Amino acid sequence: MKRFIVMMMVVAIMVCSFGFAIAGSSSDDAKAMVEKASACVQADGKDKALKEFNNPNGKFVKGDLYIFAYDMNGTLVAHPINAKLVGMNLLNAPDVDGKFYRKEILELAKKSGAGTVDYKYKNPASGKIEHKITYLKKAGDIVICCGAYK
Image (cartoon, rainbow, N blue to C red):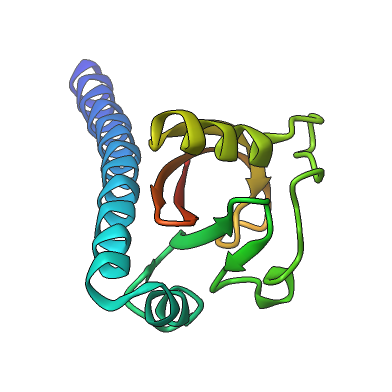
């Protein structure tokens, strides 16, 4: 019986450790995707890059990670998962807790050029409202973002 309990504890520790590893790599992948998208804007120009960012089957969609982008006024210019939002100014749309995270994204982009913002958003994979950290980087006159769910 003791042997069984020890084995179950080892399995539980391994499962928990694996879960943390996935969460960490997801954050790292989000950062890397923002850098890759920024390089795409530099290499291919904004119009070509935005076309790729809006492609739901493109190279900037990977599981629950995807690039989305705003202009400097808060209008969504790219979102491969919910195309209906593209062209809408979302600056004054809060998350479920009332946080105006898009204002924070734009302020941080203008002030620092890059950074992170936390908020809650519907995860397209789970369909649930979840805590999300978004990595952002200003690229010319747009702000490129990619969020990882915690």
